[in-house]
Length: 207
Image 1 (tube, rainbow, N blue to C red):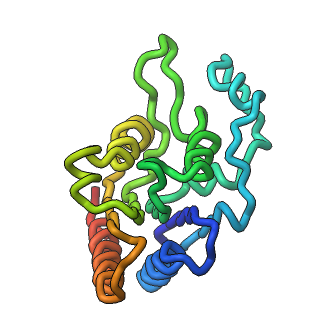
Image 2: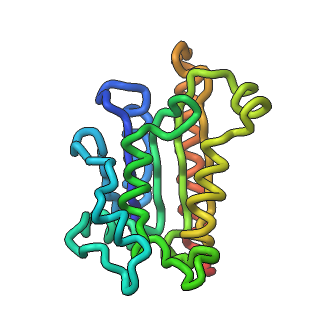
């Protein structure tokens, strides 16, 4: 059974993001994956890193209390597929999703610190596939040519590479989403369905 963690980060349950999250969740379940959905806003996830959590980051031995979000951390470490559905705001992650990375992708869970403060030591060896689905109000040329896809670069190089180096990123951004025709949404949803089918196919192949 493929374990899939779906993290949804949008405050409106009738938003385009909510529709896209429902689309990918339904397709993932149709593939037979065991899907755990985390709706950060609906669950009132607190994105604020606590003083205790921060002090523990470089403690030796690691001193982050095991009671700190244990279920969420276990879901991450067990996931073979991670699906993120979120809007891009100010060319960055929504604050609640950024806080999820801060608190859940913690040392002892997503990585270990090097003794000499060198490169992080990855721990998410089970994670093989990441599908990131985001919406943007800006046109594609601004994201690509002016800002050079900052959110994708951060996710790929600053988060996945040091924590889950075996994970393959599939990035899907729907630009101009504030005034979008229904046929564009339908085509985007069809592309997401194809992405999940391809991911499922890759997962069936031996490493």
